[in-house]
Length: 368
Image (cartoon, rainbow, N blue to C red; front, side, top):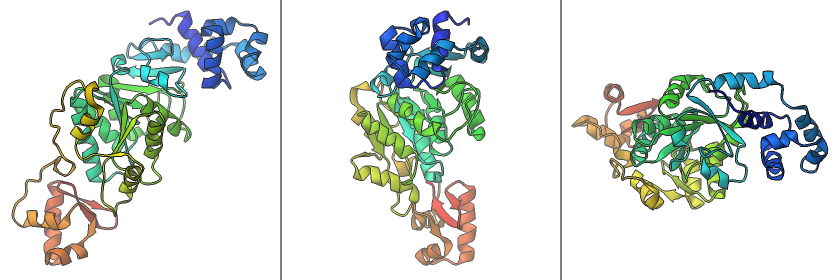
């Protein structure tokens, strides 16, 4: 594609050094368009923004700084969507600080689809990963686009589940779209670019700076009608997304977990603060109401029943004793009356069959 003068002006405005979102919006209100901003006198600009910013605007942006982005736009799968475009996510217009423009790789039609944020811990438990993927698939099958941040753990699992459904998935990233972070999610990023969408407000070349990730969370929450927190410690960045959702008058949902698990404490804190406790995808769909396009494919799927163990006899009894809290082998032996040798053989078989997970510290946890 050949970007028009207007798009180049939007891009130049977004790349102006020192110009924040609030100042950019004031300029657009005062002058009407980016072209008019660049055509204005320095004196006129100073009446709206600080003198140093007015001077930077007066200098303009050299064409060689625009060239990498213009070349990136030659790929038909790459887009820039500005505040003035009909494809711009309309839900973002209702937040305090909507991005001036968005870099998009993938499907533009997803940007205004009814969406739900699904977020959680990077250091997720096996059960948390299963929950995130299964909930995301059910909600996607119900017509919701699942929005997350493509981080390790819950985010990645939510994207994978959503791509298996009908609603699609969007990743809001904290780097330029010419970079993949974390690099371990490269295959997931490729799948999202082909079947869903990747979005960033940051220019191409932006590295994974720590401050970018909390900032992008307002877009995750802002594009979504609600936020589901699957697992979160009390220090989890996903609680920032939940807080922003509340500030933006969105619904917040949380899945409860073990009282002993650090990854559940953030969800429990949210529940104490008024988040809605959910056990099924249907709990969310009923709360969101008429905006859902079609019913979930399997709305009665519950957290502990997402995958059904094909076990019988002693293995089934051991799973009952094991439960869903992490436990060491000595405690498990006391519960079920088996020797360490007997338990070791049975636990190995259950692990190989995918029924349990071995956690750091030689702890065992039932997955399903």
